[in-house]
Image (cartoon, rainbow, N blue to C red):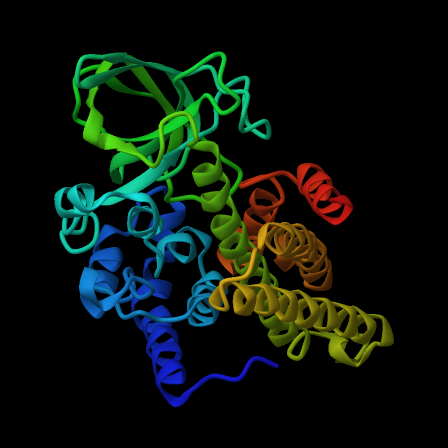
Length: 374
């Protein structure tokens, strides 16, 4: 079991209170497709969004394990806010990969001024194949000219910039670079917004780049060697998604348990039936195993260890657990499990999102095996 310091536990308790008092009342509105910008602003004011950043960049310099604990509390109620509740991956990447000049330019905009930056990696023909992108960036004086398309971009209308991968060289071994592309640049166009089965409130869709002129200073990392940066982002994102799976599963189980303790059939509570007890035992055990795996990888991250295999394992296992647990939770509640107002079917829909986003379960198994066979 993960042990927290008194200070860490205080932050977790503040998050729990925030979720119940501020987030839960807004869930119906979020499910209608409305992003809770006011909540994100409040979390920023409380210091949560930048909690893992160093103090010199406006952060709290907290640990990944604290981040994971808070993600679970949010995911127990709502996936959309859990993803962004206390993470600032763009700023974290800038700290690791940006020059001093870039840090002065991009901070405090993406740490203090409440600007969100998203990820633009996936393309119509390059999703799981991160190296197979077709978007291009061609050097033109002191600028780069971007052309191409990204798809399945999350928080599309909430972000003011995106970290975009583009092909900058067709012959070098690397050949992929990453750029911070601000959405208001001429030639950046927002395309279709997709209607998704789950993760409502996060507008997901397409971005088009038509002769977008990006200043050279917006190249993040080393030219032609942006793929390691992309993969680092994916490692951290997969760990967060894994804990979202734990939170969704725990939230669904808690809701189902509360129901079966009250629902009566054949003259007794259905929680007294052996089949229901077996379900609960299986679900609780799987959730505990997934949570332990996530914290194990989070501790590796905090100790500066390589987490590619661990993050893939945690994301694959936790997302599969979320699917199994939410399906059983719906089954336990019978007809009520299918009713939107009851709220359980939302967990089932959101769980399905997790088995696909940030790498499908099938791709993650390839990653795990590849790392083991090195």
